[in-house]
Image (tube, rainbow, N blue to C red):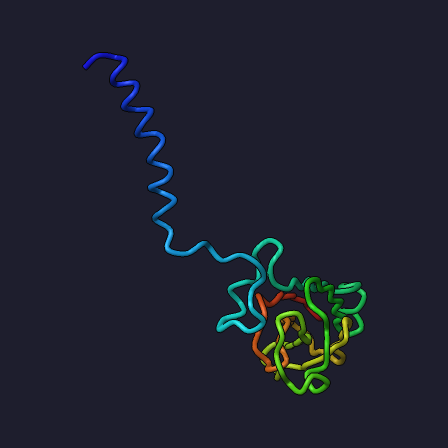
Length: 150
């Protein structure tokens, strides 16, 4: 085959290949916002720009430990903190409350961005802080904090 014929054949094929690839789509890819209710809301959390964000820190950790207490400060983004009762316990992706848990004690639901654990016994304690929807389903990953009381 001569070079000119091969070149013309390649040009003709190049014109049809993109059209064939485009025609393979049965439907266009979905775009836009996620629906309000997902089967597993945690799959969206932790991805850049999607899902709620929570950051928990211990305030004056050493000074408060000397007083046998732990003060937790929480910052959130991408979610509005609401009392579940105020929205009839109906979950929404953009609404949550904060759950605080000391060691293996029961979870404390709250809308407070600051929570104080008082009268802590000596030793090491683990505090879990997370977001939950109005139906108490966890949203994203929980933060874990450790404090040692002298």
